[in-house]
Image (cartoon, rainbow, N blue to C red):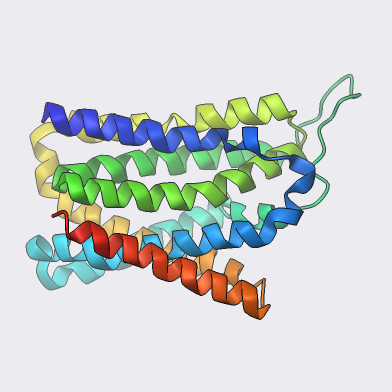
Length: 257
């Protein structure tokens, strides 16, 4: 158990550090690197779908049987409601323009949507922590696969968050700081799973099914529509290759089980 906790905390820390990706992004160049971002979106799509169908669903099916379908649908429904009411749809931010820092404002104004992003992202990261911890309780291999899928999903999302926070009125330093502290809430989710103790073993298959549903929803409702915004042939081929690579990574990880 101690080894599982250590692996989980390291994985959560690694995913949380992705929130600092804004250190390497020039805000006024985000639009220029959009095709590259969509390659990351393709990778995330393949990894999320691969992890759901290759790892999480088969693992959960062993315990839940045919009842797994309702839990998968439940996971999809939960994320639909979250996106509907929390406006958790940050991916459009990678297309934004004019993300400028406020240098000469005496009193900086932060738009309401910027604060909403912080709150909704914190909640999302708590769920990520739960997902990662529950996956490591299944096995180290499944935990690694899920961590990779979450990390690939976080890269384009965190870039989008960073640009959106700048657009909302945060300075570069403020955007980095609040994004990082929001990411750290993933530890709360992980610790919650371990605090449940022995009970968690009975709900791991359910959490896996819910996670699979959430991954399917994110990939199909959020990420795939983003890929359709770049219809050029060379961009489309790169995206298809990225999706296949994401799935291939998930398949490769099955050899470690």
